[in-house]
Length: 94
Image (cartoon, rainbow, N blue to C red; front, side, top):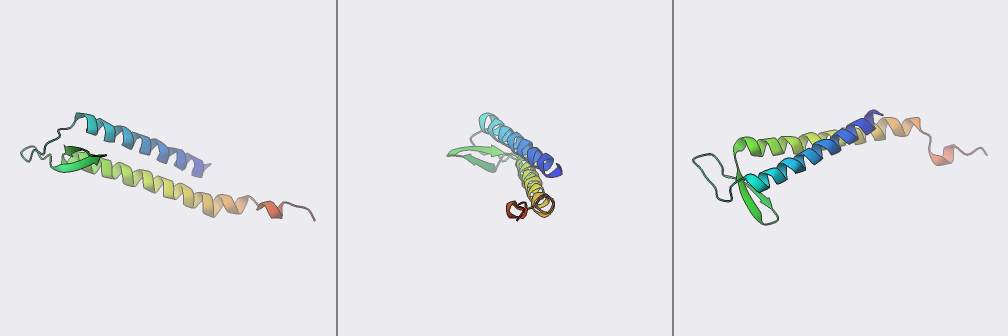
């Protein structure tokens, strides 16, 4: 249950990350502007836009958070759920 909840949360965070990524891609300038701090490059299949440090950090934090949730869900699933449910060959009555 916890593993599934964390897995769905990871998916939701990753989808929000994609939303923010494409929002930045559509609305941010295509030329660097050092006076406003827009010199962090975001390359989306050849379409380059420039972000501020905070915008770049937001995308990085969302990526790390989604990856952490997915890894935690996987570890919980492997370590706890697999031990509770018996393997298919253990269910057979010989």
